[in-house]
Length: 351
Image 1 (cartoon, rainbow, N blue to C red):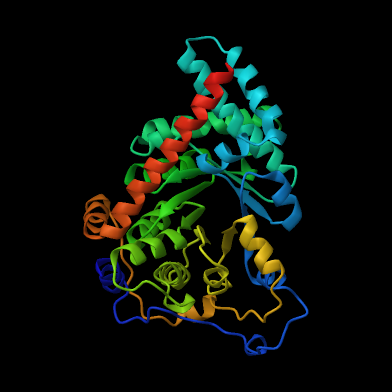
Image 2: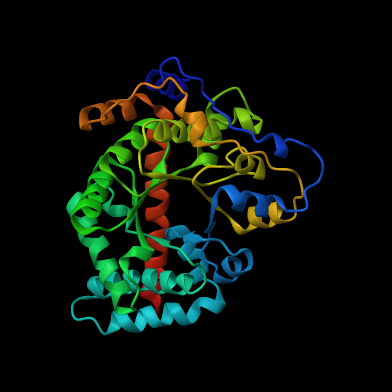
């Protein structure tokens, strides 16, 4: 498969998986701590939801949202006051209906972020409009606008991560935001090592590789229909990125995302961060199994990896050669755009 071949090209003579297991955790005997509690000891847990109630229950450090999550939350009766507040804000903006709608949308994203920050002690990731994924300048402008809106609520930029799709243009926007404006960025829709390396070279704060979507693609496009956690192509992708980053001391953090089952999460214990849905957080909370650590910097350091620099030409070529990454990046942007348009229709109907 092309995606795996490309991974091997970038990790010459290296094992696909470097595992750092703690002997004391290898027993199959039940633990006094839940799997979630054990996971919190080695990995920062991030809630993957716009539902404040779920965030409050599982006490994650950070939280992340996207257009799909905000759309779903906006349909819930308990969050209607936030939607109406955004609508009223938009109505007060000078300009035509399109501008008022755009202002209401941005305001709603910030309102959700502010409510989340009342619950989590860390940061919230706020995503810009996916339709700007191929426009560096507009992405920077929109990000700075969101940061300015947060400031009106006395939320400092240090608690915000601007979420952008990991297109070449999105990565360049993140580089400008990080280096020129000291705004932290979370690059999302990561599906291959080329994207990950480009993000690290740009000095972004955080990347979000999508484990489950990689698994979905392989099930749909190969003969293998079932994978054990350690053979899961999404898990392998995140392990490769983690080991590469730690080997070469990149400061960019890795946050595994988009999980299909708890096994994928357990297979990435030790990753910098993992963003997990409420359903899987609940499953881990009720799981008493011992949880071995799967990733650690010491193990990554002994890997025989070849360092690469991904310029624009190389980036576009590697993406072109990786059918999985190209497909999933495009689908992800289209899906986020579709949900943004649905949310716009909801807001517009109230304006």
